[in-house]
Length: 333
Ligand code: CP
Image (cartoon, rainbow, N blue to C red):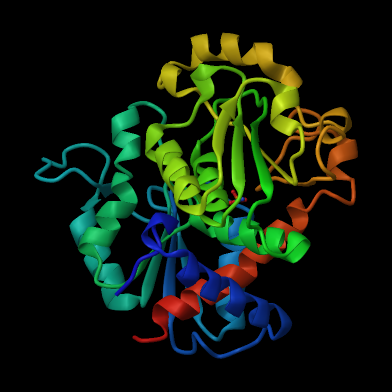
């Protein structure tokens, strides 16, 4: 039984097989690969794209999805072992994972970092606890990484650019009024490096460099592929010659759990917005973002409305890659 918690546990060839089948599913939407399969989608955080694409995708393959929001329409869950449960939680992950495994063929989880304790968030305890106590496959719908977004991102880049080997890829930090999850940024550098691109990480200062758990994976993927991984704080150097520009905002790891002083620093970097001037420094790059995106904060209207912006195509591809992934995970069951 295989989980899909991080793409680091999957080879490039295995991921490419999922991408190839998703191209078939894009042309032939209605197949019966999930007939009589039931899937639990657990959201600890809000979603638009993920919930819609999973729910409809499962239905299109003949399966059934149940959507639960623990702490709202389902009981709050305790994750600490040996806990005396005298607070808000009504049941323990051991029973929750066991019961859902009785009812369902697969469990998918969205559980963002809480941005209070970095070590706790890096442990990815919610999804790893489901994986430990469930007897069915577990899929990550975004925790401290976002592997389903990675698949949709790479499918979109392959549709636009063909073979990605040796292409120049820029992940740029952008401003946002709140410190956001690093998940998509972590995922972006891991998958771009795995698929053979030269990866540049552009962020305003060392405060915004991603955690070494993820930069070290990107570095080692680049080393294995004979490509480069570089970090820059210089906007022109970042954009220069890029074939792909991917944008994301995230909070500083150096100010984890300390949003007020971090905001004073972050507010100095509003000029990291993606605009036409920056895109003009690239090698006719395509631009994307995982969405949701605040227009004229993270990217200008002109960039979002340009032909080179493929963010909506990438969001559309979420559906196809997830259908392919679920079929792959459940086909031998
Ligand atoms: N990109 C993404 O996961 O979108 P949602 O947060 O709307 O699901």
